[in-house]
View: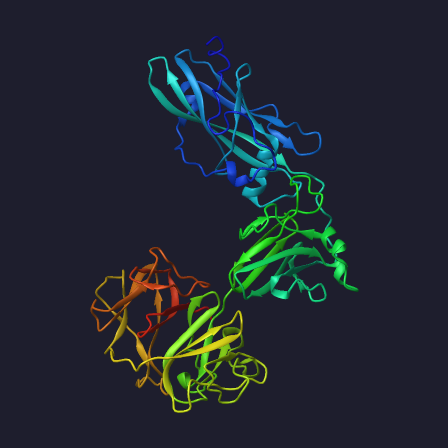
Length: 503
């Protein structure tokens, strides 16, 4: 090869051999996490990798379709061939091709912009600096092949024609409020340019968009006004919990489509109009049974319902009558005006609605019963399931773990115990202990100080935190970071809560 000693011809790009795809192609179709291990530094073999002449890209109507991003020069005669294996930017592979005459790595400008925006969740017209890692296979004159890599610096500035911020803020319309323009979900500005709202979904597919708030401040706007001030996503029905916004007449995307949240539950939605992106995450809280289980005391916070996921919770024990319980969330614990309960005093209905205004106590039956109370705080519904009286009881339930796997930390049953602190509790088969760990541990719950019966989590590597305090029961160890926690276990269901003490 005549030019080998000066400008190495980088052979055909493996991921995009024929041609670059269009800028409207789904990002996931061509971007993928790095899978090839990085080789020796290119300089080890006399290969110089530097920024190309167009490495600082500014996206506008005059930006060329392709960009000379990286320049590669080899000065060692013992290199017989150099082939590009991958071009990695921000952890993802970007398609590229090579010019034989100039030894430059060439990429599609729109694809580069798309990768940078997606990896940073930022469409603002600010300089986005990044490192491009070029991975090669070099064939030496001896016939040996080695992997080499070189880094170069570059930047992208996304399109400047982003929407102006609405001084009145933003709202949401979606499935949870029947797309009712008279009752939009208003978002609260929590930081300059960043807005949040809590939404409660009750079905599996929950479509929604963001809108400028100004059109909603007077009479009901018509849909043309709404749609002219809407924000969505590129792919209709995209369920990504974090994504870039798309808007009308968007310079990067062909059309604006609707976002979807999958599943019933409570969700915290964050709109970032500084970077033109959004996120949503499940937002749950801790709910407590107040009533017979804790002696109807407003200073006894030891009967939390066990988390099931999707804003559903349960508590299994013996309930003595139809006035067995009400429900408090952790932020309103002790406030009787905010307690959730039934619409009917002493209701024994198998299921019903939960209200927190003038709510009433309720239970599974007039004469009492062993039962599981399940509440769905997304739909504000409750249900009783009658169970047989448990025939298995344990002399002890304890924590056992990596501190030495031989010393148990005993829990106390919230019924018939002699502890002054926990006296008058009536929640048989529910156990509690507070403990402080000075370092991270792995643990399980077990009965009778042996391994005949034990409880853990279903997925290996599950770790609790201030927000994650339960998981599906199973046989794997639970990871508990250093700190003080309240531990709870129901020995009938195997459900557990590990709640971080932050007070």
